[in-house]
Image 1 (cartoon, rainbow, N blue to C red):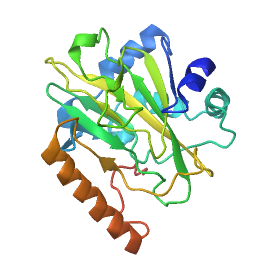
Image 2: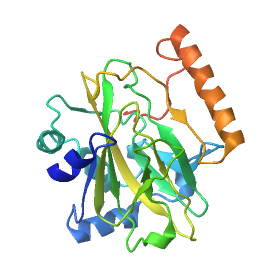
Image 3: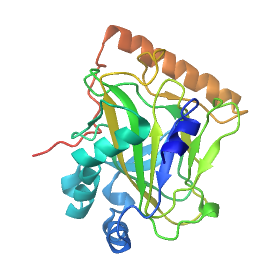
Image 4: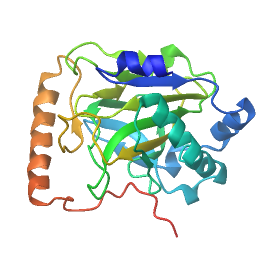
Length: 251
């Protein structure tokens, strides 16, 4: 894992671990995962998927698993693998939680927002844990990393059952999810880790930036304008004009 991350960190650092949880427990996560109609639909030129961060609306097991990845020992271990000494999990699940991608769902190449909701800490790691049994390569719905930018070729990392993928997030960590090709659901439990220090000295604040895929000229022009406009707004309103609703609002 350390070697895998170190070999890739000059572009987009990542590693993955298979068979993370006991198989019975991972299968139970898949069994109790919410249906699309129980989640929020995000559909635009940027993305097409279902998400939820309001964990108390879903089976308790899913909340227990998502916060298991925020356990102090787990955070410390992942920090050691990635050589990051200052790591903080996110109890509010800002932009994290549950995601489901059904047939024809996709996520275009993008850079995650550089900071947490309060713009106090840097977003530095993305943890993606997949729980759909027997999810095959031809099904689509796999993570793509674009180490040479979104106009080149991506690296595909399969969204295999009971696999955890950890990837670095910084100003060059373009990533996406390719289209789901079958009548099925690829289910994911996700967390972000934050730090007081950016991964790279050249990192600067940025909003979430989307791009089209290579040769999608119109999409790229539109999304470039969209990103520039939102960055302009954030220069005036440091924390945005409204709070991101995708957080866990605990009772």
